[in-house]
Image 1: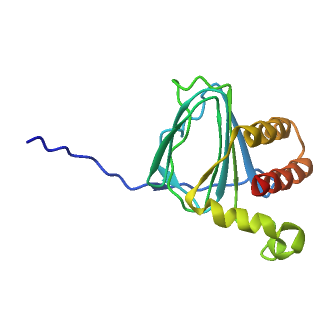
Image 2: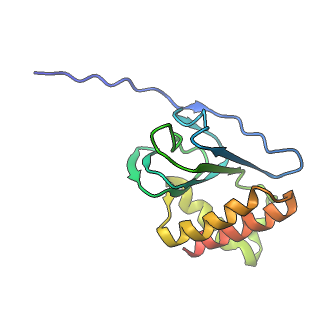
Length: 167
């Protein structure tokens, strides 16, 4: 009889600090340069990850799966996860957007025009992987955001969240 032992480690708490003058953090890692990629961690911020090309493994909560030709994932608050790229994924870049559930204020998501985004955040509690069409549409917007000023990034972020909810 062979006994297998698994080393179970608790996820580490990650502190997220938005960029100066912004209500959320926008980070882009070129050619697998995300040095936090393999750490098992969690944070209260909701995280949107766009992997442009490549293939790899996603580990979110107790779920492990694989992706090919890039990925678009929305991870809910305090949901443990690992990064999605490493030196073997062959992606072009990885963009990570992290925002607090109330990043626009406590009452903002109660107004009729954006209540659907509050529903999206509730659905993301277990993590959501989006399909090819949504990945392409949102990926184009995320790529544009890299060179935008903070106000335009915010407008695009709201547009992305609306697209994700309607997907």
